[in-house]
Image 1 (cartoon, rainbow, N blue to C red):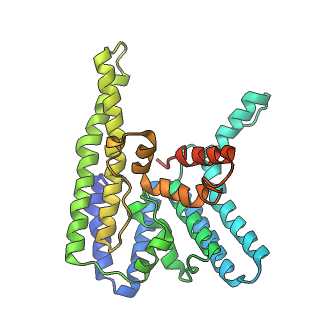
Image 2 (image 1 turned 180 degrees about the vertical axis):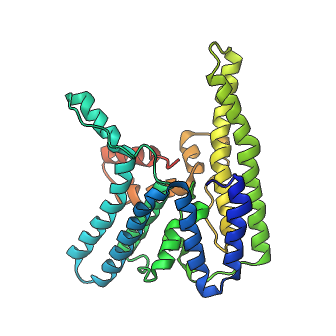
Image 3 (image 1 turned 30 degrees about the vertical axis):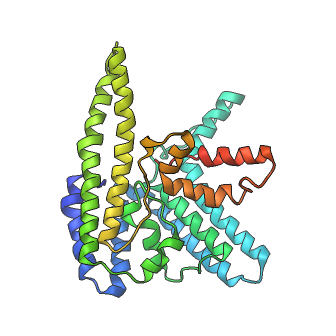
Length: 319
């Protein structure tokens, strides 16, 4: 289920909004959590155990990290368990068959491809980054461990940002999980932002995709047509991705949340570095704070610094 489909716009979203606003304040996160699980299972119900496992692993590890306050070795072990659980799931579904095929090509082995993982679990990259940031922040003592599993589950599987981000950190959203208010002005601003993103997706990105499809079926395209294809492809990716981000931010406002911006006019950038700072900003800031700076940033030897820069600016996009 995607935001631009009729079933989402005319069935799932109205029902979810009705249940959410009719629920008392103490049950709003429960409604959001359950509706988000329905949204997730609608796409691939067979991957529900993956989502549940990641929620439980990081929830329990977070509690353990807080209880083992005076035991550094135990805290490190718990963090490694949380990291292995989140990254292991992502690696298995995204790269396992690639690694097997590479081994077969390099060494002539006969490893069979793993069946059933050709389709990625919905939003696995996004909720993997979110659970990683939560566990790391608890380990660093930047945030307190979440004791309410429903609130934690709502944070991980929240459907507005599940498909295409932006990546939401627990440290940024914790106060809103505990207490938030949806004012009429906020709901109106959220609806306006959602409609803007929907227009980007349906009226621009989808139309440009038709041109891309026609070009791929053309046997001898002209030079001008090839340039048109390149421009259409570039704009399609931007309007599709930023459109989803706009819809996610808008939906967040409707439910009382404030999500970080994900795009800042990347195509007006004057350098590649500036482009990556403006494109998928939540991912770039995530790698900066959880990979680049912990590895030493620019305060290390030149060779290591260049490696850190490469990791920062070649970080894989969840899209």
